[in-house]
Length: 185
Image (cartoon, rainbow, N blue to C red; front, side, top):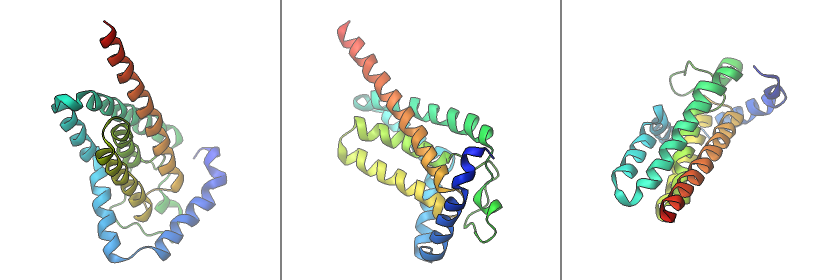
């Protein structure tokens, strides 16, 4: 694991143990499993992008969301996970019990979080708040579910959010610039 994560590792682990000890209850576990399911492979967010692309009024938003999702996948899943190679928390913290099947890829950053916020942050910037705000709330629940279920460290989730914030900002900027250029010509 990279040296930059070493100093935060004990605090990261302690947060997960506190969640395990104080927040886990059966009804909430079922809810958290559902939200993690929404993030599996980014399927829910891919469906959102497809719907946005199919509606002429939201096509520009759909393009920005697609670009953001692709950026997040490339940076998170292809670059950072392999570069940092952080083991999952359950492999490092003996007392931590994961509540879902143990993922086999690296932990840093959270792909579920990146995909969720990559699309939701575009939606909140480009669509009415009645659509964008619930999208961000779902993304936040997906991200928290990864901690609750014991498969990511808090810094994994924060890094996924950061990648998504950068990707969504660049995508929204690009699509707005493209629209401005189109209007001028």
